[in-house]
Image 1 (cartoon, rainbow, N blue to C red):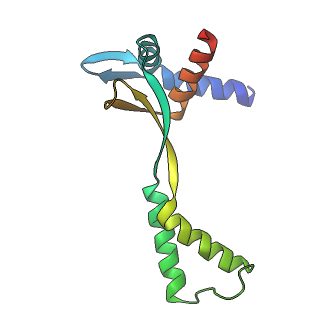
Image 2: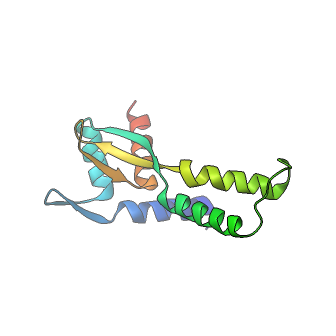
Length: 124
């Protein structure tokens, strides 16, 4: 089995799982189809990556307890330290959302988002 066939099988398995929303049980694929048919917007939002921020902050604290790399900005440890400092405050990740109306949305997985994009490109 090739990698693409394995990835397609994994995606199909993920999309065939049952989900309850608003008291109705459908497959994830069924919900995406329903959302696309009713004209819901599917968007990608950048949200804070709290796990990465927390990890970077703890690594910065460990580095500050010992030797803080300063001086040569091209030194690999200084570059790593500066990147960790930025990540501690600015790290974000994509979150895939389907908006039911202006304020209500459901969070989608990457697989569900890819399926919705594929479906909308086939329709257009």
